[in-house]
Length: 223
Image (cartoon, rainbow, N blue to C red; front, top):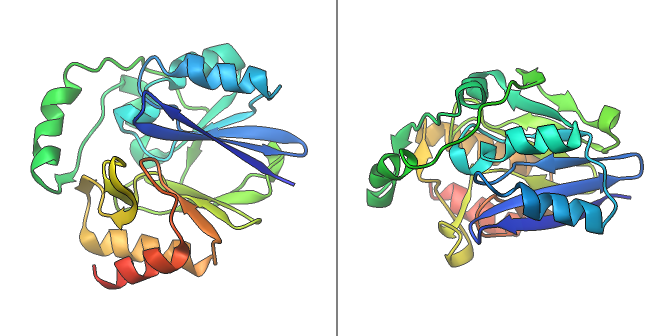
């Protein structure tokens, strides 16, 4: 049996602790300075993390990776295409979608992210059995070239920023929406449809959500 704990850090980004019978993983780490909230939740539930999965290399997902790796000893996994963001602490934004996205690079200049060397570079689908989790990592490019998702055998899908909940998770958070950056609309649609092909029972994004699969399917048809 697997247990999912959502930790929303700084009121903005969802991180997820997935606890299996023989291990636990963390999906994303939030902004810099979010490690305390995540560590406090792990201590509260007596969870020892084996793996930190980074869904993509943006500052609100990699921000506390260095601190959490240092504090927990967990391995850090990221797709090869987004690994440089971890190594340098600098996010690379692709094509912006909307006015706010055009302004975000200005905000990013004030966000300092400590670099960290990833332990696992992903370039194909990967089982999580070794870390005590019945599930696997999917390749879901679209928001970035190296975007990945986690699919559990129990039906939960964790898609990072492949799908945004409403307006940055704040307005209409359970309505599927495009992320603020993309490498191409076709890539987004193809990856969303691939996630749906896995027959998820619920879809968890990094901002807002969760989504019912049928709502995501209707939205994807409109892309």
